[in-house]
Image (cartoon, rainbow, N blue to C red; front, side, top):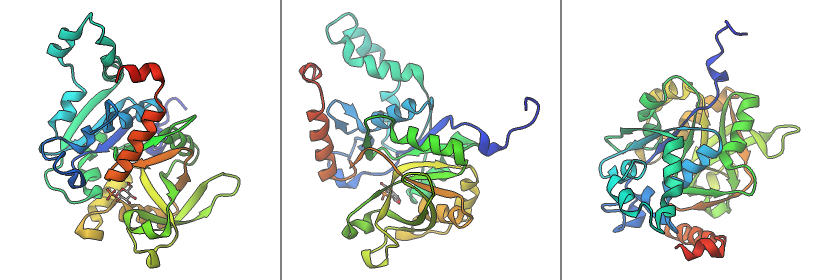
Length: 292
Ligand code: G1P
């Protein structure tokens, strides 16, 4: 259909949004002057893992919602002439290989969230970078590993088929429901681990949770989410919640939840951060360890 305009939902996903304005209070005092997204797991900052996951999924345009005190993120993905010049031709030059190829492969754009009014508000702030097209969202706190396709890749395959919003989920212990958005849904026949979402609640107490299937920080959102977010009143914690906006889409049958293959570390808390650090250290090859 060369001359026919494609429906906007049919467009491929070319942009990934990274809400990165939060204060990271659980890591104070480390996060007083350092963005929590820049805390390293081994030698790589958290946000770089997320960018690599997006790139692996074929996404090259990274849209980052920052805030005051977050300039280190921009500097990290920019050229550092002095440093690069200093180590050029030395035995340490290879230590920058990954970040150099990343910045060559990707385009980065930034906007600032001036006030912290919740994840939904952060995503709405990113509209100016995304425009009128479907897009991915990565919360860098949730660090995901996988053996084959990354979580975003798995979600993009589902999106290609169903053209609606997709969220990644995993089972959590009942006592932990109040840390997550929790969904209820019907399994889709013939699709392993895929659910049509019919209810979702932000951080319910265990007795109010519709299930133990928790949303993790990976989303594919259709662009109508921006109009919905504009109309979404503050919810849990007095903040504008993406979970509430997604519920509007879910009620129209337009949200699928995928139990992804892989493992997630909650690097937004100290326990999860240490767990991820140990995991990545154990899974680093001896030759790479020598460079640490
Ligand atoms: C956010 C979302 C929540 C989701 C979680 C995943 O919460 O609001 O629905 O389950 O991310 O990490 P936050 O962790 O930012 O409080």
